[in-house]
Amino acid sequence: MRLHHIYGPAFLLIAMPAWAEPCVSATFDRSFPHATGVESFIADVPSAQFPAFWQTGLIDGYQYRLFSNGEGEIKASDPNQDWVVEIACETAGQSCDITVDGDAPTEALQIADTITQCLLSSEITLARTTPENPIVDTTVTSQENVVAPQNSETEIACGVATVNEANDVATMQRLLILLGEDPGPVDGVLGPASFKAMGAFVDDSNWNTSIKNVISALDALHCERSQ
Image (cartoon, rainbow, N blue to C red; front, side, top):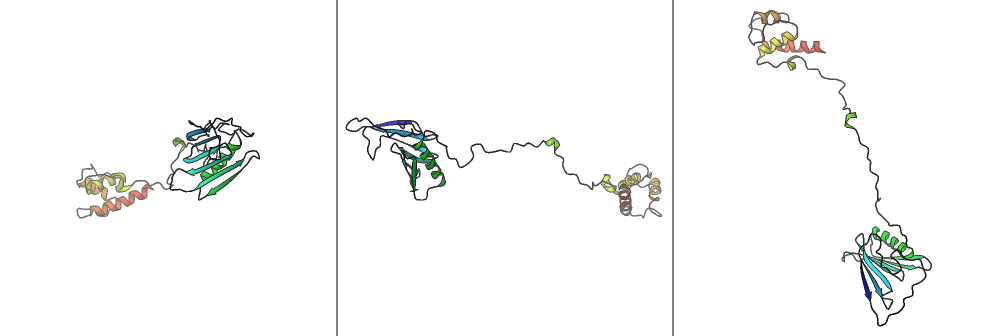
């Protein structure tokens, strides 16, 4: 915080009014709570323009000025915004008037209310637009206890879906084995054992029998039995 001393033509003993000490101290050399860029001023010869003590700085980005005669002011840091909030406190009567010129934001009005507290008392309650300690949900869901929903109708692989052979004959031979018949080795070659096993499901099986039709019939039968 910077301290400025404004000299007049002669040094005078400054008499302060008898009221509660403001939050920035009686000589305004204590920074306003949470303010930045604070500067304090002392005038040897107080006047309407320069009271005995005053202070300037920034509160949440807004410019403020506090004077020992009970007055204050808040303005925007942006020169393109022409609003101003003026404060005039009757410290003896412990009351303040706030005058708003222009479209001042809500935050500035909250700061003005805090400044009135400061001018009337050494203790203030800072206005905040959001909770200082917001409530955070710290509930942790254990992944070990999370159970994925199960499909009540679990699909069971059956028939051709369970077979992975090189050709149709080998696929048919594998399906015959799944259905309890013995087509001989699963080698993809039609032989007497394969025809005999086919005969359990196909009438008059021979070389002219459609292998694809046999596979389709065996697939449906195996899936039916698997349910």
